Each structure stands twice: as C-alpha cells, then as structure tokens.
Amino acid sequence: MTSTTTGARGVESDGGATLRLDRAHVFHSWSAQASLAPMAIAGGRGCEVWDVEGRTYLDFSSQLVNINIGHGHPAVVAAIQEQAAVLPTISPAHANLARGRAAEAIVRHAPEGMSKVFFTNGGADANENAMRMARLHTGRDKVLSAYRSYHGNTGAAVVATGDWRRMPNEFARGHVHFFGPYLYRSDFWSTSAEQESERALAHLARVVESEGPGTIAAILLETVVGTGGVLVPPPGYLAGVRALCDAHGIMLILDEVMAGFGRTGSWFAFDQFDVRPDLVTFAKGVNSGYVPAGGVIISDEIAATFDERVFPGGLTYSGHPLAMAAIVATIEAMEEEKVVENAARVGTDLLAPGLAALAERHPVIGDVRGLGVFWALELVTDRATRTPVSAAAMGRLKAELLARNLLPFLANNRLHVVPPCVVTDDEVNRALAIVDEALTVIDQEVTA
Ligand code: PLP
Image 1 (cartoon, rainbow, N blue to C red):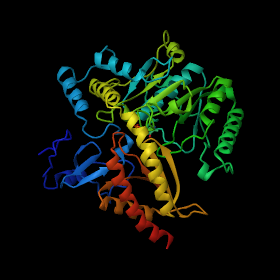
Image 2: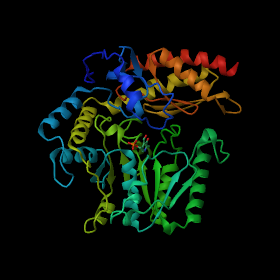
Image 3: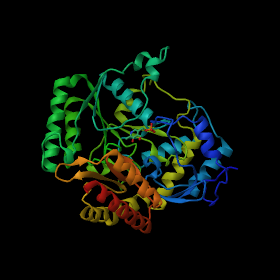
Image 4: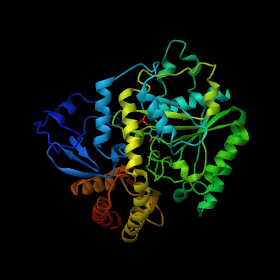
C-alpha cells in the first residue's frame, strides 16, 4: 500500500516494508551505512509529518531547510498533477510554457537587470554553472569562497568527461578560500559587529591582492551562511565585498540555495542587505523541493556574453516541466498567501524574542542568531570559554526533542530553528515550549 503526501491523513500500514526495503537496498548520503535507523515517514501536511505508525512530528527542520511552503501544499500538488497530464517531460532545447512561466516568476522577484534564468537539477549544479559563467565571462580562473560554507556535492563529473565538453570546463583548479565574518568565534579578535565587518573585509582584500585580482573570476558567498551556522553578515560586509568586486572586475555570485525564497523573511536574503549580485544561485525553496530544481539568475551583462558565443553547459532535465509547474504554483501561492511576510513577522515577533528568552533561562545556549525563519542556537559547555557541547550531548538533545514530537535540524553543536515559512504562531509557541523542556535536560547534564 502506498502513502499519500497530499494531505489525506492516511497512515501506511506497511508491515515494516518501508524500513526493511530501505535498509536492504538504499545507500544513504553522508553516512556510514551499517548503524543507520532512519525515520520511516509516510506523509506530511503544512508543518507536520507523520511516520508509518501514525506518530506526528512538528517539522522544525523543513527537511533539508527546503520545504518553505510546507508539506503537501494542495495548489502545488495539483499543478504537478496537471502538468504531468499535459506534458511530463520535454528536452531543454524546446520552448515550453511551464519553463517560460517559471523563469518569469523567478525574475519577478530578482533585481532590475537580471532577466534570464538557467535551470539546473538542484543547488550544487547551480553553483557549478554560475562559476562556469563567471569564468567564461571574465576569462579568469580563480573562484574565492569562504571556509565556512556549503555549496554542493558535485565537481568531478565534467572533468572526468572525455569529449569536447570537458575542455572548457577543466576548472577543478583555482579554488581559494578565505574567512568570512563570524563574530561569536571571530578569526579577527573582534568584539563588535562593526569591527568584524571591517576586519573580515580587510582580510578578504589581502587575499584578493595576494592571489592577483586579475586572476579572480568570482567571489562565491552564501548571503547568509546556512548549514555552516546561520551566519548573518554584519552591517557593511556584503556592500564591502561588492565594492571589492567592482574595483577588480570580479563577479559576485550569491548562493541563495538555502537563504532564498522566503527563508530570511524576504524573497532573497540579499534584499535586506542592499547589494546586487552578478549571479544568484537558487534551489530548495523555489518550489519547496516537490520536484528537484535549481538554477542561476543571470545579470544581463553576463547573459550578453553568450549571445553569440556558445554556453558550454547543459543538463537533460534543465527546466523539467514538472519542476517548472511546481515553481510557478509555489511562487504564486507564496505571493497570494503572503508566505514571505509571514516568515518575516514570525522572525521578528516570535522567534527573536522567544529564542532570546530561552537563552536567558538556559546557560547551555552560547549564542542566538538569525532572521525570518532561519535561526541557530549555538550550544556550549561554558559561556566564558565557548566550548562546544559534545556530539553525545547533541545526540541526547535530538532524542529529547523527538520524544516530544519535534523534528529538529542539528549541525555540529547547533540547533537550527528552521520551520517552514508558513509556520503558525501556535506551532512556534509549541516548538519553543518543547525546546525549553529538552534544553532543561541538556543544561543539567552539560553544566553539571
Ligand atoms: N548551496 C547551499 C547554500 C546549500 O545549503 C546547499 C544544500 O544544502 C547547496 C548549495 C547544494 O544544493 P543541492 O543539495 O540541491 O545540490
């Protein structure tokens, strides 16, 4: 029997088949396989998911921080079904209405002067293609990016390719890293956000100078660093990076794969920092992952580079109609239901004060940071030394949260508080109460 994710609150009675088949045949990401015991999820609606036994969890992970519109949104599900009945797939070489409408809907929320979209299957290949565009546009090789960042899990495939498509893309060389701002664990001995911004910029300027500005195609940055810790850039930092790029003809690529499409309380996170990138990469929230999709929003200047010159990149499923229909329906539903506004309000009115109140009660919380529905609590054994809590303590925290029916997102010593953008006040209040209870257990263990 199959489950439904479209809202019928059906529970799979599968006699354990989900888990049995998974353990027998599914090879999981980023894991040693032998000891895995994944949750067997049967369905979801809004901010809730339920397992094959019918136990319901409040999803404060948004899975991999991608279900911005919530689980099983009926309009998005219907749009995918309708598109499947009309034309489920078509080569990217053809024009297709769903694809054109998806690109138009994305560009509607992009800055002036960015009117073209290249579609990919997800975030990693969006970044690959953005780097490729910047390199071909500038005729330079190097890409600078931050040590605390995640940009995806591809890279070798095109270099392993044997035919002509390899030659313009042999760019595995030329990656240089630098330290971005992170006041709580400053690499620059800063004691204020202003200092951190200024010093991180001075460091980046030194890296650019030392690498040779004329060799650098792009600086690639997550606007708000996501999995690396929900690091919101301090005032002036992104504008400073933009100025540095402008001074040296370097392209600024902002990775909005996790931060984009409402997560920070604006359509793009960079909207709140008054900076215009040359290339924007997106995925996840663009259609809440209902069908895999990602892409690059391209400045008109960079797009013009490829007016007469061949762009040496492509994917069989670039602009896949089912993903495109999901994008159109997701963006329209977000506009109509004011989902981005909800994320902003929840951040300001509930999560900011609610998480600050938790920090007052729980000594294990060393730092609270974030915006919109994109927050992290950094957990430490001692606020003075800022020593991260152990992996065992994080494991205990996860168990305490799950025991109270809250599905969390944990990374290193941090609890990321990242519900869908459609989260209600009641759901936030329930989650805060659960986190409060779970942290009481951890406090006692960690600081005892
Ligand atoms: N960029 C960022 C900021 C991400 O958070 C991720 C995934 O978590 C990626 C890129 C890679 O996206 P994907 O897993 O869709 O390839």
